[in-house]
Image (cartoon, rainbow, N blue to C red; front, side, top):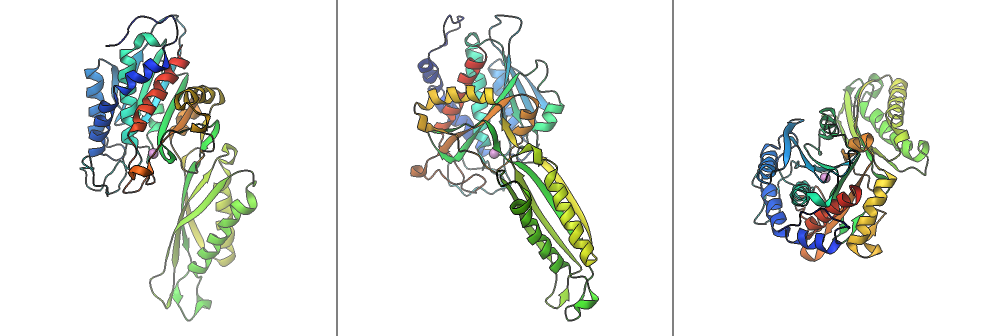
Length: 406
Ligand code: NI
């Protein structure tokens, strides 16, 4: 079925495309199986077992149980010289705590858990890329490592996988990854050098005032009034402290206080999220939030407890690898209009940890098709994508491998 002779010239893109198109029904079947059995972060046992059994069936070397449920496959291409490159491909495997509202034959069978972000698609794309490459080992030189990562939606599987050594032995020279993206229409690819996705930080704040009678505020320290001033003051971080050239968000998403109409609340709690692109702001928001909170609490005689978590750093794409991905994408979508450079999002991704270690590129594959009602946003109970995008994902990966490794 497949050519195995070492190529004397580059493989024709048409040949690659038709071989991948022939895998489309397998891709869809695989994606639907994974979709029906979604699992939350670090619990991807069924998914990991499915991946491992396919890799075994196809004779692909792999390791399981990395950072709990992670799987890494290694595909050796031609050995033409002792100094060959290793390219890693990363896919996330986890689902979300959402009850699926789609009425489709492949609907989630796990109560309250759903692949509402497309990671079922990412896993299928990476797995079929492994299959394709294993059948075409003579078409590329060097090594491809495919990283199936748990817990992207949280608490984060990329960092523990790196700590477990997935970028070593053989040492990874560059990494690529993709997200099926319903913010872009089918047939487009979002590629951008530099910051693609934002850093994600989270905070929880408890203010301890002094409760009392609603008619006698002079005997109290009103935690609601105080917390309200903090909410307002936090809005000045982006508007007055961050350089307007930089994009950033400070959102207070939770405000809880009080038990009765005529009681001044003893405590108030706030929680929120911070997003930014510029890595130089890595320590800025935590310090600024803390000083605003400390100042306002001191002024009113309250105390506070602030928990601040730096969840994921920003996703920063390497210029050279992005250029390679862009050149493949331009060829693949066959029209410059299909490449979308304005694809930045304040959403976050722990692909960023891999990109901090090795140069790479994370890109978006447009997967929305409103004509088929496949355009709900990510993390929505009716999220679904156009499965035609699966083959595009495989083609992008395969052609990036052949370009990078030859
Ligand atoms: Ni996602």
